Length: 103
Image 1 (spheres, rainbow, N blue to C red):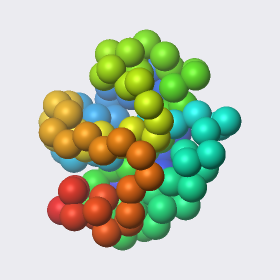
Image 2 (image 1 turned 45 degrees about the vertical axis):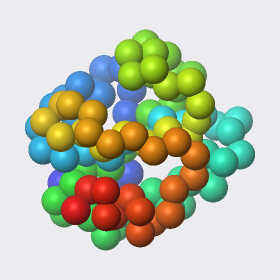
Image 3 (image 1 turned 90 degrees about the vertical axis):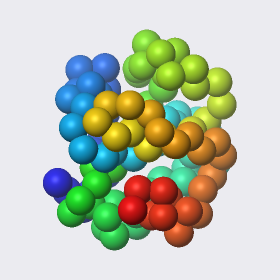
């Protein structure tokens, strides 16, 4: 596991979420609220990264995955357990909310 946010794409997404617990931020570079979420996500990774994988997926580069999970607004954050989505958050989320969601 890592205490940094991993950049995800169509090639590494499935392997990233299939085992254990993972938090994925679906975002885009032009999205203002997404830019606000990124430093929060970095802090979450520092706090839980030893036990939970934290990643970000640019929806413009991986539209196939965004479509698979019906991502219509960003930022959307999904908690995966063993490859299955178990919690979905839309809009900017507080650090405490995300840490609690994966704990």
